[in-house]
Length: 282
Image (cartoon, rainbow, N blue to C red; front, top):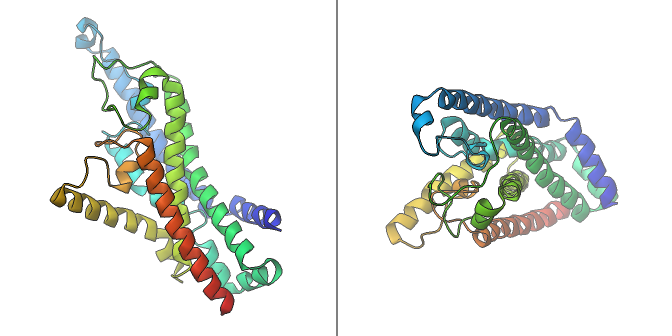
């Protein structure tokens, strides 16, 4: 029965205009970032300084694709709106089904646990897809004119420090590092989408549900950074927004990324279980 429910949710996703709207917005961000890189490359090629510099100012795919580009306005804005783009495809679905009575029919046929599980799994998957597609598009187009070469610590071309997310791969196998970067950012997209689904268990307004993840991201960003600066708790990255970057300002090792995602998902799953049971009793 769970497989049938998942297929139904997948069909709903494929027909959702909000899913394609999210993809469109993400691809627009990706395209602008690619255009900026192409313009930068042309500027570098025509630079007289580049001709006499011992290494030149060559671009590197690992730090110029949108997932590794933390220094341009368009990339920063993209990362700030990731929670919204991830929540948009499926964020309104549960609220609408509660309102129009469809949820009651599905719960009667399949049971609350399976219905919520299918809804939550597809929400997570939809969030991942909504973020992965623009990232892969951006990576593929950038790879057409930016070389995927290994960096050298002696040149200090990037801010990927020892102990950061797969820093060893960055210097030894940039292709796998890029794949891991796409996977990391997409996983965060799934987390934000699942957060919207969790919020819909409590909040009845569909619009508020969709924007809840981005509100949470901004609020937690400022609160956690402020607390850490006052008490000096850790040198690791604490902001969920910055943790979405494969290479952030502070160290973000794999265990920290995994711990953040696991803890957030565990809390949200517990909330879903609690309110799912409450809805069943109602």
